[in-house]
Image (tube, rainbow, N blue to C red; front, side, top):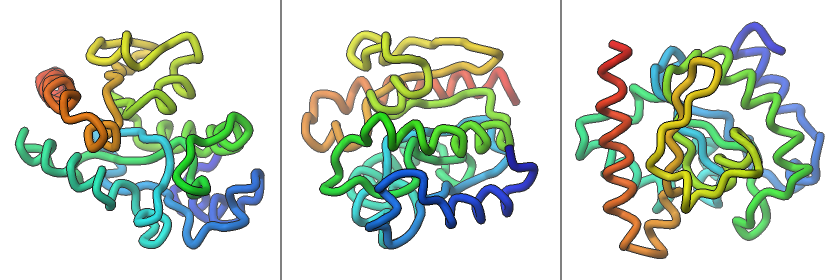
Length: 185
């Protein structure tokens, strides 16, 4: 484990633990408040994220930003990261070996941030963080507490672009996160 953000990021920039490193433009390390009470974890970078090196800057990220702003939350108050730090080809779901190669980096980010709440955006984040036995459809919207951290699984913002009906559930889940944040202020 790395003691500083700089050491961790330098290690990821040099990473070649899986095949995703072969086609990356940039690693997508993470962004936001490094002492945030709330951390959001997504699946992996898309084309816009790979280009800019920042998570959630594409259409799904813009939709997420609108939802956060609607609740009076600024993404700079939160810390945002992904399961994998390099873009999977054609925005496919990261393969198990790719996710496993990156998980220690993500765990290190969690240890450095020390969030009280982690929002798991989509099935890939849920299964890689809490376990394969969880399904996003049944777990979303339900608080799960482990080792003193409260997890809120919800839809990935990209799912909202494909199915507008999920927007209300996503919004309600984020409202629960905002309410829970009050306990940690």
